[in-house]
Image (cartoon, rainbow, N blue to C red; front, side, top):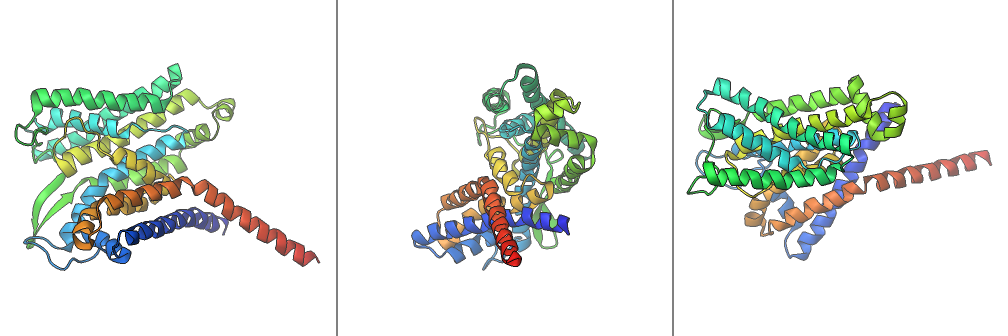
Length: 370
């Protein structure tokens, strides 16, 4: 019974934050002169969760839904990366840079190699994990050995990855037409693009299977293993964890290594899955949006699945919302920002709820004693 009550408490606070965010977003949409209910419904339509009035050839609600799944798959990995670091008391704000480093490394090593799909796709995943984990481990090592704040080092590495990789793309791998990196081969791509299924053409994301597996593995690591216990202990109190005999430095480096590996998977499923190329001098917002997703999901792997679906639904459906409901797509970013704001207030909301419950319990106890 206590576990059920605890689960409900952990769920209702994010739900309350989401409800407040949607109400606030609806008010903003209404102030622009648009119908908020129509706008929110168009978000569902744009993500394949509700039918549109008409579809182009080879398209349907199912094709929109598969495109939506393809869009949110990297976000699951990125949010898990943020959550693992936060559990150990670290803030990995360099997920976007780690995604870029892993995506570029996998692109150069595998994407342009000419290997067949049987070899190329697993190799892309392996390279992404290795490249991302090395980038994350460097941040953890700098924190452990030199006490360099992980926020500062990860931001600096973001800039380093962004401009060094842009130099190599523009010098060796640029597509003269698109001004992006050359597209990776279909054999190396983690999304099966325009795959005929009946009379439809679907973009089938292979990475979603790995993402769901990663959710289970991260949950198992944090909830059922000694390493997970040590990471959480370090996150609660480093001095207490050290007193208990836990190697705090090792835990910090390992947490950032695991976080970087997950960010690397986010990078390869984005750059060699959803997109297929890399735009120079651009850090995608996925790594930063993942902070909101992780907070909204209470840093719990299962909660992250649902918060990912919500945040990416707003981003994915914003284009259709503009055409169908006449609401500027920038409003979607405003709604996402409001969700982040309310998510950051989760601790306060929880305290208010507990304070109110304790006050009511005290009054009941006082009345029963009279």
